[in-house]
Amino acid sequence: MPRRRGLSARLELTLSYAGFLLIAGALLMAVVWVYLLRYVPDNSRGLLGIAPNRYLLVRTFVPAAAVAMACLLVFGLLGGWILAGRMLAPLTRIRDAARLAGNGSLSHRIRMTGHQDEFRELSDAFDSMLEQLESHVAEQQRFAANASHELRTPLAISRALLDVARTDPERDRGEIIERLHAVNTRAIELTEALLLLSRGDRGNFTHDVVDLSLVAEEAAETLLPLAEQRRTTLDVTGDAARTHGSAELLLRMVTNLVQNAIVHNLPADGTVTVRTEARGDMSVLRVENTGRPLPPELLPTLTEPFQRGAERVRTGEHAGVGLGLAIVHSIVRAHEGTLDLAAGPSGGLVVTVRLPSTP
Image: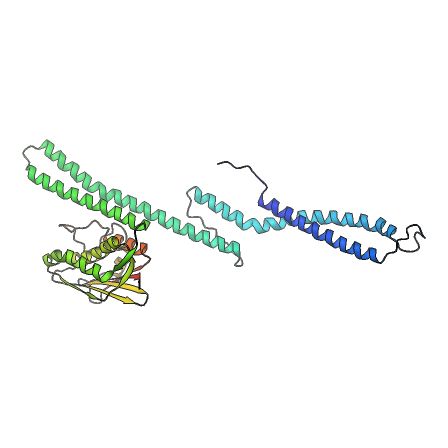
C-alpha cells in the first residue's frame, strides 16, 4: 500500500547532528555565562568602562554567543549532511543491488571493500543471499526444463501408440495396450518422484524418532526379490542408529539407495552391503556395492536431477527416472544431514549418509 513520503534518512541524520551540536554549544555557553556572572559585580550604574560589570558582559558576550551559535548551526548542517552522505553510501549500494535483484538480475554483487563493520557485514550477507538465490533459481529452471523433457517423452509415445491403434486396425490391440500401460506407469513414477522431491525440498513433514537399522532391514526385505532376480547378495548389518525425521521419507531414502546399488551392480552376481552405526552425535548409513570402477568426474553429477550414470539400466521394471539420488540428496538435506559419494576401492559406489542422532 502507498505510504506518505517523509524525510530522508540523510536529512534526519543531518538535523540530528546539527541539533546535538547546537545543544552542546548552548550548554557550553550557559556554563561559561553562569561561571562568569559569579565573579562579575553588578555595578552597571557605576564607572562604566573602568571596571568590568554585568552590563558590559551582556553587551559583549551575548552578540558573540549568537554569532557562535549561528556558525555552529551552519557547521552542523553542512558537516552533518556530508558525514551522513558518507555513512549512508554503503546503504545506497545495497539499495541499488536490491532493486536489480527485484528486477530479476541476480548476478549482480556489491563486493564492498574497506574495514569490517556493520555495513560490510550486511553487504557480505546480501551477496551471499544473492548467490544462493541465483543458484537456486538456476537449479529450479534446469529442473523444470528437464522435468518437461522427461514428461514429454512418455506423453509423445502414448500419443504415437494411440495414433497407431486408430489408423491401423490390423495391429494387435493387446500389444498396444501393454505398451501403453508400461509408458503410463513410467509417467506416474516420474510424477510421484517429482512430488516427493518437492516435498523433501520444502521440509514440511512430521518429525519422529526413526531407527535407520530397522529402516534398512525393511528396505532390504522389500527389494529382496529384485536382488534375487539380479543374483545380487544383500548384506544388511549394523547397530541401532536413531535420528529425528520422517519415517516415510527416510524409508524412501534407504530404498532408493539400496535399489540403485542393486540395479547398478554390474555385472550381476555382485554384493550390496548396508551398514548402520552411531558415531558420536551422528547416525551413519553406508551403502556399498560392487561393480566396475567409476570415473571421478561422474560422482558430482549423480545427485543432480535426471542425471543417469553410464552404467544405468534403461530397460526393465526398474529402469528408473533419473531422480533416485536427487531424491536422496533432497531428503538428507531436509533432515540437516550430509551425503557423501565415493568410488569403491575395487569398483562400485560407496554412499555415506550422516544424520543428526537422537538419544
